Image (cartoon, rainbow, N blue to C red):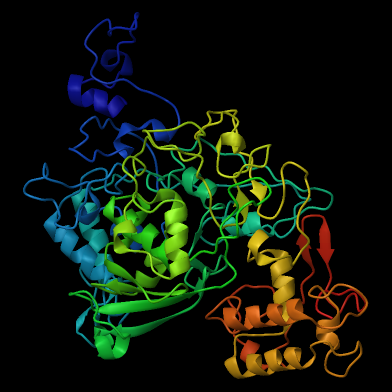
Length: 619
């Protein structure tokens, strides 16, 4: 404040610069600048305009956190492809820019040279190369490395040059680097200290437990700005919707450089021109859009279901499908949403069938897999402009959702749309905060998606207000929860009970191994209790009791996990299966517990057979 005052008046006195108004109409003197203290969501510059440039910008003091990997800020925030661009922006800041109300580059950084070097960093053929900048070098001795094929700067070398230009342009003015501390009560166990986020992260909410307690409270430093996936932009927004919606991929919280498939059971790259694998009919089975240089193919797990939107689950369970992914990705990019910025290299999502789809890309680099799998996935049936409700359901059941359905309802992608409120907003019915993740926005009456999970009945309750989330598989009305390992249509696919069931099934993602397991389970169908080779599936979490013949439910559970592939692909690891027995399990993620786990779900403690040989979940 004092420095800004000096620019206008030649004095550092804030009193000279800021005349405190005696009335609500105007300052008592010349008012060069005023100070407003409050949550950073009040800063108007965060909200961009889809019809022009928002010049009511002000100044604010803030900082960036969780900027892993380094491209997420240098490219994702300051490349001009991420401004809100349209007919008013002439000459265009970037031909890739689209109109949006929550565009990442809200400061309109628009420097062609910076765009060029940051894009080189983002889509370099390799992450590192011989000759990259190294500790001890100075600005006059620094060296840079090139990838071998094609020859181009490595991401690390281009990243150095991007940072150098970033500083020269003063795109951001660094003042200090904060140190943050997070605390939690000592009685909480299995709290995850994430490398990138510390304690407040999704895996803490998924895994933490405390004896005798069935709820946890998290305090935010400021209210959320929006729970609309098209307008969410703050850390508090994504920590809230991040427990309702899931993403295709995730990062190992103990080692953020390690990616693993989350909603997907696996992925592959059937074409990549950098690796001399052409993107054509022969490699893809269809002719991709013009400009496609790489394609990433994903397979969705078959046990992911959307949360029920009615009391008592009156409708059939609705699975997540490839069309939901396509709708989310296509519309997030088309609307210039904050989280859609990472989809800049995406040309199209090509649906192969209900569970398999391709993401066609016009560029690919070392960060691309991490970035394109980050956006949240939400159900198209609630957001589509032309195919909502039963129309969407019918198209899915018919095995084809038309391209015309891949557009969001007018008004629903704006910052003013509240998906939580039970009252119509912008002329559109709301109460659609419905996802597939570990927690539901559930009202006291059991309705999912509406304002009942907010203390105010609408999104963004002010300080002192709260959101109350209910675990997927539990009822806020009765307080009861489904038993661990229950039907996947009514419980979270990565709950502790599901993990216990996966261990009980005995599959590990190796096709040869799993085919034998499925065959063994099928052989045991209706065999007498105690039949040799069948006891594994005649008791345990998949067949509770002291011994019961195998039926359709048990065989189906084993088939389910054989179809899922590895629980955390591409890592060849599953807890409870010793590496000494099966070499296939010898590649665990960095930092993950290797001990045979005791699992907790709600008030249930799930002991492995090594602890409880009678009732162990994997006996």
